[in-house]
Amino acid sequence: MTAAATAVASTSSLFAQQAKAAPFKISLAQWSLHKPLFAKQIDNLDFAKISKEKFGIEGVEYVNQFFKDKAKDEAYLSEMKKRAADFGVTSVLIMIDGEGALGDKDAAKRTTAVENHYKWVEAAKFLGCHSIRVNAQTNAEYEEGKKLAADGLRRLSEYAKPMGINVIVENHGGLSSNGKWLSETIRMTEMANCGTLPDFGNFYEYDRYQGVTDLMPLAKAVSAKSYDFDENGNETKIDFRKMMKIVLDAKYHGWVGIEYEGSKLSPDDGIIATKKLLEKCMDIV
Image (cartoon, rainbow, N blue to C red; front, side, top):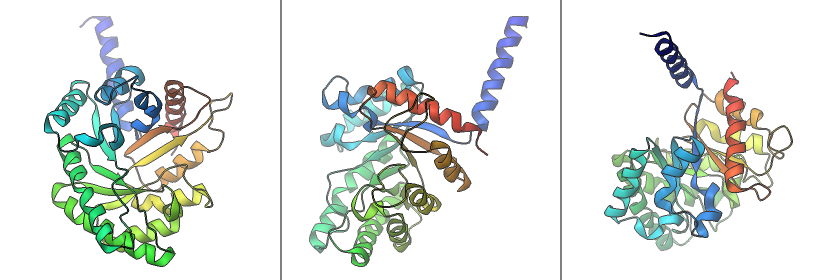
């Protein structure tokens, strides 16, 4: 082996060791690109390619809004799956919105909401995802809402369990943005495949660091929400190192999804800035 080849091999080995030793993996939430997607500047089918080629990110988190009528379209899902495989990208999860309130006070509406999610469980399994992200939406008050949301989540999780799919809930407005309420609701389901997706943002009247601390013991994915950055590349509203210390202290070493939702930077620049910030957190022990 030549000296140059030896150097390349050594460098490759070093990179492999570093990748293996990484405390978490970085994925890209499709919502980060919602502006160009809604504007039809980019297409859902190109998401895996964009994630890998433009940003060097090897995990993707889909949003059902961008292929809402394709949940049962096997040809379309096959193309999504093929493109992810072609670029060596892992399909991590699908974020589900607009399928009804899983904690609705009306029993019939609650059942409809549960059943509306079935097709997305099946789509997630087909694509090779480990989870669907749902909302613990309810029109009931605190205690009743907890019971009703747990009922809907339990039934959906029972459906998803044989397919090896997790049902995970994000703090996403309403009572779900209360970390205590959401963690207690998930525990009430008594389903191992029902968990949380803590989002660094989306806490409105609840301390965000306490909220993530509440939710991490049940986490099966994490959303690194970002809005804006200072001259040193730090997020201006969220202390990322503090957040990632909470995440890693909970023994979580899975995917952490970039979800840029700011307006000052372009979607591309916001994603890049968030990725750089997460990479700086790789040294947290």
